[in-house]
Length: 281
Image (cartoon, rainbow, N blue to C red; front, side, top):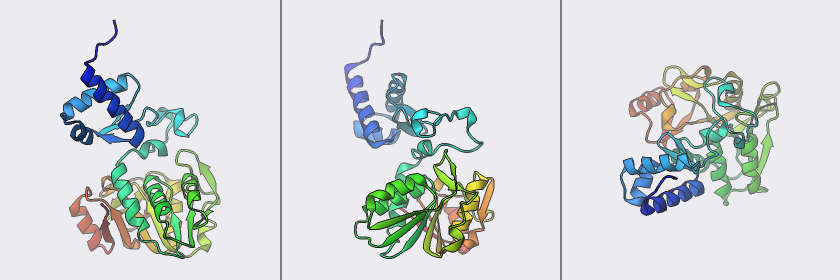
């Protein structure tokens, strides 16, 4: 005989699955508040939904069933978890990490842009949130965005002709939909943009800005050098972390935009080092 489910639990789980499908991600704590049940009950519901392939559990909550690394639906055909470069995850799985924080950072960063600005926009999930927020800035005119992210270029296509998009060129890295060297920095070396928004995997007051892979770190540094104002965007989980490839020293950055979950002591050290810290959200 099949598994017997309580009717009320079944209805609640169906509604949870619908929320997760519609919103792309739902936290355990948020679901508990919405349904007036305990976090333990929510976790049990998510486990039951995952067993029926209706959601996939991730840290802190759940995503739709196609939202985890290693699946062909992610847009990186053929990648399996065991084949991924050390420390790297596909764009499509990373976007479900800290989605609320990244969205807030995106809105905060987009608010810094004015008519006529030239913006360099790095590849990544946080910078994609900036692109989406820029699309919603229907007041902007004559903005040019230079990006090495193919997905970011497609996001911004919806805002044409208010926003013009220039793709840097270079060699494709399918995992992140990014363009890197060879030829990834040629255009950047000829630019002097208003501002550059660059993502990373680590922000440390002593080591500086770091990333998990060398090819993208090289392009990130070229982006920063090509802009009059240099802005690092990183959710709180990356503050205080150090990764493999160094991008630049903290003193070379004008602004760090992060969220309130970042370690306040580390943020104080970053500010003392001469980098302005702004909290989004």
